[in-house]
Length: 507
Image 1 (cartoon, rainbow, N blue to C red):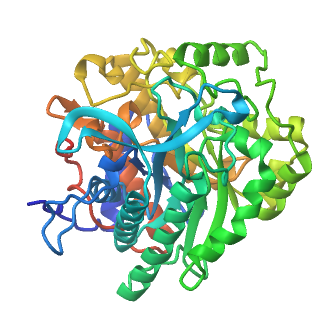
Image 2: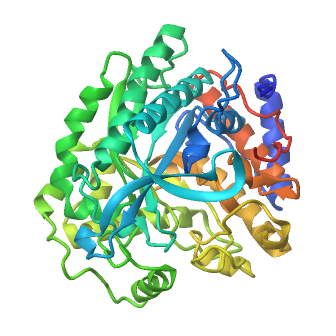
C-alpha cells in the first residue's frame, strides 16, 4: 500500500521567524536574520520527470488511491513551503548522424528495460498514441495534485539526447512541428501538456482548490515551451511564436491566465556545436567557448533577428534561464546571484539588440531562474567530484549523476559542505530583499535532482546509504518560504514528508 506522508501543522508566525533565524545560524556562521516582505522572492523546488518510470501511475495502485513517482515528488516538494512548483518533463531525441540542422531521427521516452525491474537499466522507446494518452492522463493527475497542495504550476519541458552520447540540448536545432518518424515535438510534448493543464485546471476549479497568487486577479499557469534549448529559439523564433496562440487556446482561459514563455541558457545562446557530439566533443565545445572561440554548425539556418525581437518583446510573458554563471566561491557577495542575469542580458543586447533589462524593468517580460543551485561536480560527465569550493563555484552546472552514493558525495568534503550552506544562506538573504537587484527575478527554482537536490525531492537523491538532502538547508528554505507566503497574504502549502525528516529511499 502506498501511503501519503503526514502533513505537518502550520507554524505560527513568531515560531517560524525564530526557527528561520536558528536555522540560518546553523547553516553558516556568522549569519544575520532575514527580514521578508510581500516583495520577497521564494526559493522553490522542481519535479524532474526523466522517463515513463517517473510519471506512470503504478498499475498496482488501489482504486481511488493512485500512486506515481510524480505524485511522490509533489508531496516531497510541498515540504519546501513554496506556493509554486516547476515541472520538468523530459523526453529524448534520437540522432541520425547527420548535420546540425537535420540531426533528429525521431523522439523516444525512457523506460526501464524490464518495466517490472527498476534495476534493469533504461531503454529509449518510440512514441505511440496509447503512450501519449497515458502520458497526458498521468500528467493531469500530477498537475491536479500540485494544485490541491496549494501550488501554482510552472512547466519547463526538456529534450535530452536519447543515445547516451551526451549531446547538449542547448544546441539542438529543433523545429517544433517538424515530424520525425511520425511525430513532432508538438505531438509528443506540447499538445499532451496543454491538454493536461486544461483538464487539471478544470478539476481544480471543480474541487475548489484553484488558488490565485497574491497580487493577481486570476490564477496563473506558466507554460514554457522548452527549457535550456537556446539555439532553436535563436534560429526558429517565428515557428515558436506561431504555436503560442494555439497552445493558449488548447489550454483555454476558463479557469486561469496562461502565461507563455521559453527556457534558455544564461549564455551560449547560439552555440550549435553540441547537436550530435559526444561527451568529449561537448567538453571541447565548452572549453572553446571559455577561450572566446565561438563554434557553430556550418549548415545552421540564419537567425531572423526581427522574429527573435518580436518573440521576446511582444509575444512572450516570461523567459526562464538556467542560472549557472560562475561564482567566486567562499565569501561570495550577494550581488553574484545576478551574474547569470547580467550575462544573459548582455549577450541578448550585444548580439541581438534586445534590451532584456528594459523589458524586465517595464514589466513586459518576467525573468525567472528556472534552474538554480550548486552541483559539486568536477567534470562534464557527472562522475568526478569537485575538490574545493572554488571548483564548485566555477561550474555550478557540473554535478554527480545517479543515485546517492556516499563515496561520490561532493558535500562530504567539509569545505564544500560549508560553501553549500553559505551559498543557500546568502541566496535567501538575496531573495528576501527586493531592493538589492538590478534585474528583477520573479521566481527561482532549485534543480531538484542528483547532487543539486538539497531538498531531497527526486527519489534517487535518497538511498539506504544516505541522501543529498541537507536538513539544515531544507529547513531554512521551508521556513523562509512559509514566511514569504504569509507576508504575501497566501495560504499555507500542505503535503510532503514531515518537516525536518529525511525522505525514504526512492522506490
